[in-house]
Length: 231
Image 1 (tube, rainbow, N blue to C red):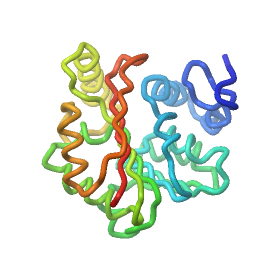
Image 2: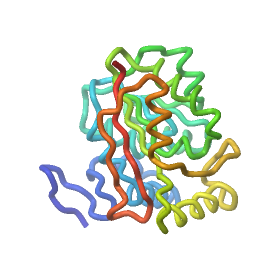
Image 3: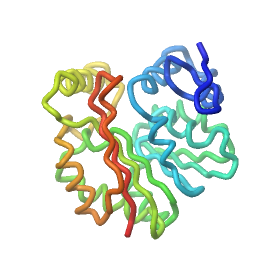
Image 4: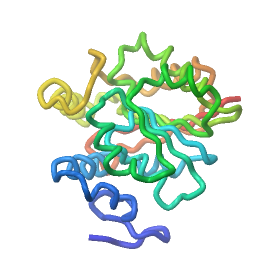
């Protein structure tokens, strides 16, 4: 069912603008369901609203749900999506990747940072750090900084460990997705940390945090969203 919100028709089940769902119509039903479930369970639309500039990068783009939000209806933007999971990049290329303003690659952020230093206005990271050992965060966030132009924006979302039932549920859910269903690839680490730990890692990487927003209400996962910029 669709409704009209903030001058755009949206799908009530996902909160996603309907035109942004169209690229996924050609995927097998299981993959279409996965995209809709992802949109219904995470505030990706809220992330997209924080885009600045015209050159966008989605790190850990998966099937391309956030890429679609960033690209569809925005002819002035060029959106790059990267993910180390070749399977997911394949699904993204078969859907939102048909947009000529979208580029998708199976690679890591560290690899891209070497090739495209200073190429992006906004870098998006949605639910990636929890799959990395904290010891790897420094290199990861340093790469995100290298990819941004001066004054560029980092929009990062994770689930926070706030001690709630939501955090416990989300952890078991992710273990299921990674270890049993193998829908998500991990470096070997699966875990959430308090928001202060995330904030400290972001500032230690040289970013200035402009906004910290909680998106736990209305979701069964305690989402926390940071918007930061390069000084």
